[in-house]
Structure formats: structure tokens, C-alpha cells
Image 1 (cartoon, rainbow, N blue to C red):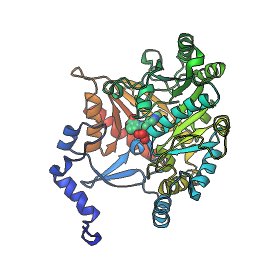
Image 2 (image 1 turned 45 degrees about the vertical axis):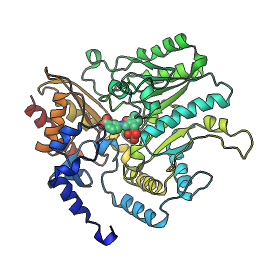
Image 3 (image 1 turned 135 degrees about the horizontal axis):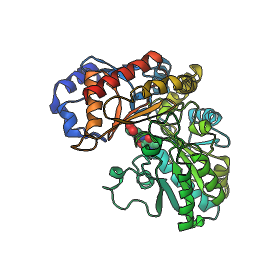
Length: 454
Ligand code: PXG
């Protein structure tokens, strides 16, 4: 088909909306395909805080897409940067070749990251960032002559993407149980969700720092000399927003230091302003050895991820003959020109509009607004931190997840609101450009939906 024969985008969208037979070929990710295709939720365009559905409704985005559109949708500065870059340099390799943008971007990113995480390795997604960080951790110990440190430690309820490394250290049962034995030599810390002790906490829960001591138990079991790294989401999103108890992350850091174990923060969700600083590491005052990112890095506009490494880790590889490749790892699209252009423009917007501070400025209002839902039917817990929130609902007697899904679906069709559901937890993570009116609107609409679903 020649370009002149290509159907206009609007025509394609109309076709897809009107004709369910066109929906069969796309095997949708993390979706109940047969259910979705009977009553599709289709988005056609987006601007600022709103999507527009294919049936013409304005949908308030309570989740920044999938936790990624922190600067809001269709920001003209980001759009123009991508358009310009596509017309200037569409693709260039970064294996034994280069182009200026990833260097410029890495320098800017290194300035945002906490000291001493001053080196950046590019990926295309959170899953790739996680597998990259795990591989760097293993290789780091090996290049230093401690190649017996191969064990990786994750957590129950952890989500670290869907690569084999990520699901091995992850702790979401459905993401693991179908896929065989995964990586060997992995162990898990307990999760920190404790509704009985911490229910309806505002911000960080008070109880549970002692759960970090479980790491000492794993060290005693396996011996520190076999353990390469611990990976933790400072605030976990996918498991339904699980927050670190006060003092927990600091304690994990101390135990890692004591035993020479690397600490990886998976900041795919918390990176780029979600909790009021560029990184959760800064908000919590706990500095890991590696940070994984994606999502907000490029505002979701072009896929991109990045792993931040300390100078100590990076420099450990910079030995041997100068002509030798130091790390046998990378992706065809590492440092892709369009992704770099999108990320550079996104950083301009974050800085120019002061978006990293928004979660601090709006945090108290957000907290007040979400906790006002406490007395609605079936609400069993409410959790919040930065511009993240979760409302946990009692499961329907007929099965776990049914009520959560119904709220999510009704919010979309009846209240023009996009939320996420994980089981019976409704999660919220709006674009950071939102204002108090948007917050009121999100929780008015969510409250109406929860009432309607009682
Ligand atoms: N780590 C963390 C902490 C994540 O939250 C990934 C890694 C994987 O990223 P990619 O880019 O490979 O998907 C994630 C992704 C949700 C939801 O609504 C969360 C994610 C993805 C999709 C949905 O909870 N997080």
C-alpha cells in the first residue's frame, strides 16, 4: 500500500471501534482478553490530565497512563522534540558507535541522581532495567574476584517487571507460577503490608521496620559471601501500593553495608517525581548502589529505561586492556535517538514546571482527599504517599478481584475516570501537573463508583 493509500488514523480508529472482529489478532498484555473484547475500553487521544475515549468522552487520568505520564499528556515541548528528532536522526547504534544525545542526557540524569550514582546504562523498559541491574550486580562481584556472590534477594509482593530475572526476584504469584523454575539461587524477604497494625495510616506506616531484620536471617542461612544483591521497590505500586514502614529502608541499607551486599532500588514507579523528589532514594535519605528507572524518564512518550550505577560499580569494570569490552550487555535501542529526545524534553518540563515538588506541595491535600473515602462501603484500608494512593476494598464473597475490577470498569464507563485495579485494590498515581480541582474530581468520581459498586 502506498502512503497515499494509507487510511487516515481517524479512519483506522473508527474501524477498530466499530468492528469487534478487528480485535482478535491483538493478544493484549495483562488483560482478560475475552472479557475486554466484549466491551472494549478504547482511548483515542490525550491532552494534559485527560484522555478522550473512542466514543468521545473525556476521561480523567487518575493513573498517568500506567504510572508514566508524569508531565501530563501531549506536552507540546515533548511532542516537538520527538517530531524534530525523528526527522533529524531516526536511529543510530550505540554499540561501538555513538551519537550526542545519550551522552548529553546521561550527564543531565547523573546530576539529578543522588551521589554517587553518576553513571547511566540505557534500556527500553522497566523490565530491561531490572535485568540489567541484576546482571551488573553479578558481574560487579565477579570482576572484583567475588564471583561466588550469585544469590539475589527480592521480596514477597515485589514487582520487577516480566523478564526472567524480574519474575525470579519478584513476588507476585501469578507472574511467577506459570513460568517454571526461573533463576536459581533467589530468596525473598517478607513484604511489609500489615493492615491489622497499620490500617489507614497517613503516609508511611509506623510499624514494621523490624521486618528488615529478616535480611539478617537470610544472610545467616545462605552466608553473606554467596549474596550479590537485594532488590526492593522503595514504594511498591503493582502489588497495590505497599509502603515502607518508617526506618525500614535505612535498616536494609545498614545490613547490606555490613555484609558487602549491593542494594538495588527499583524506582521504575517512584523515579521522576512520584514521591516529591527526583528519586525516592532522596525522599527517604537512603542511597542504594543501583537504581532502575523507566516510565517517567521519557514521560511514556517513547519507550525508555535507565539504570543508574555508583562510580564504585562503574569504575570496577574499567580495568583490563583498553580495547576490551567491559560489559557484555546492551540493547539495539539503548540510547535510541527518539527516546533521548523525549527524555531531554521531559526533563526540561519537570524542571521548568517544578513538577518534582508537586508531590510535596499537593501531598497533604491528596492525603486528606483520599482518606475522606474511609467510611464508604467495603473500604478496608487506604494508603498514600507522595502522589500515590490506594483504596483497598473487601473482596466479594464470590471471589477475589471481582469488586476491584467492577470499580475500575464502572469508573471508566460511568464516571469518566481512569484508575488501576490490582485484585481489590484501586491504585491512583495521577500526572504531576494536576491541581486541587483535579484531586477533588478524582475522589468525587471514585467515591460515586465505590458507592455504586456496594
Ligand atoms: N519495576 C517496577 C517497580 C514496575 O512498577 C517494572 C519494573 C517493569 O516495567 P516495564 O516497563 O517493563 O513494564 C514496573 C512496571 C500497575 C502497573 O498498574 C505497573 C507496572 C506496569 C504496568 C502496570 O501496577 N510497573
